[in-house]
Image 1 (cartoon, rainbow, N blue to C red):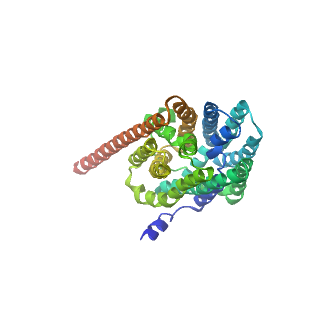
Image 2 (spheres, rainbow, N blue to C red):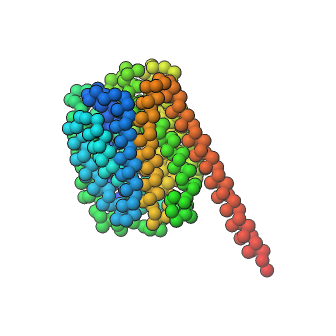
Image 3 (cartoon, helix red, strand yellow):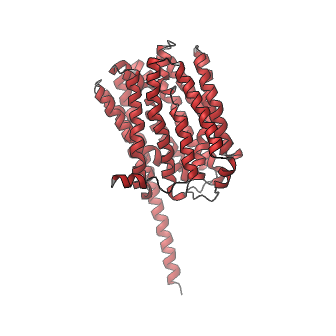
Length: 418
């Protein structure tokens, strides 16, 4: 029964979506630098926690700018070229990071490297919308996330072993070369002509607005997404530092926990989405996930036992399973074809802005108020986001019900007219 459910959750997806998933797997399997960047900057380059926070903020700011530009370029010249050149060029930039040592060099290069890398994000989200069928778009999104998380299950684990036994320079080479490999695979596996033929401009949408900046429902959704993402991104900044300095885990053990996150998502997410995607409660499911993400940080305030680290990792993984695919599905279904890139850019920018805010917020809260206060504040972010998304989902369902009732009334009147 479980085997059939799992296999059924993968059926009906287009060949192009599978290839796009493989591109993301190759790229994300090389995620080696970012999970250990805060440790590298403090232990190898001797930067302060505050310095690390601002460098990671530069990383996030580069992501904001890159995602915004990527959305504009996707609407103007198409997703295909943006995806290829973003992957190809960012590979060389990540390799070059190992050769710089000063604070301002890191701020400048990490900003530019991330800008180029995150041109990929709105282009990739647009590609999923274009290459998938309307009835299984949520599962198509989840397949991409599955590929990303399978790569995430391998990448940080391998990176932890490499950092412990070979040195950090190998992480930069691994990260860069996998980006370049993903670009070349995309170029050969999904020829430009095939991708253009798959493009269907007649996609079902839920927005009536001509501009993303006039779509107030979507803007509120983005604000709630931003709040939960600030909490989620502590996973890449304060969490590794806490696990190492307070719980006493080695880099290999931290890599294993990061891998556990990816493994859980790889196993559980697709069947979950398959069972729930047709219920039309995307925002409520995303709200539940946001609350679980907040709870995953709250439990860290109770103990420095290694088991709490495992519990926290499991909670944030389950929260991610609900929050991200269903919020992504809402975003993908929202725009009209002509402004799809801009909608996807704003969605991606929510995460990018969160990465600007999350590192300095987390590290400065720790420096001035301590770990427990930081966990309490961050957990509130998840709860607030959950409440907002839930309220938006309830409002949306009420409006939909009223529209359907009005249509039924009109039909009844037409039938009874002489």
